[in-house]
Length: 163
Image (cartoon, rainbow, N blue to C red; front, side):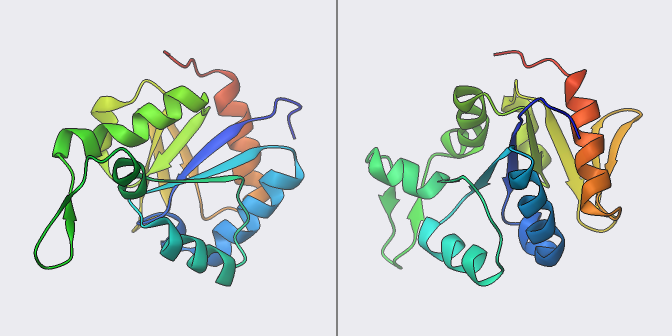
């Protein structure tokens, strides 16, 4: 394991919730190695926190897009009890959070967010549990968590954040 302490962003819907046992082990190991785990989600935070606690998934910080914009007063309530946030604000929120917090790598299953990212981005494929960073640069989330974390440490050592 690398001595560089990383900040890793993990999307909740489509990544963590697809393989909770794997990500519980992965997050526990990453935290033990001194890395910080940021769970980044649409939200709402209260429901995600309940799920993470029940699944024994450790993390350092949770960022929920819906809660963030609610706090800023940029959420429109719908008559059905739901809410709306302008699409461009929603799509750029994760990227802005990662940039501000200097996240070293964000793992997400939604390619529509990639356009907004300057932080290195790993596109997670739910079907294969593969993560694509760039052509020829992939992560295999079917490997044991320690091997995947080693790969992330090795790969991020060569990545540049454009912040």
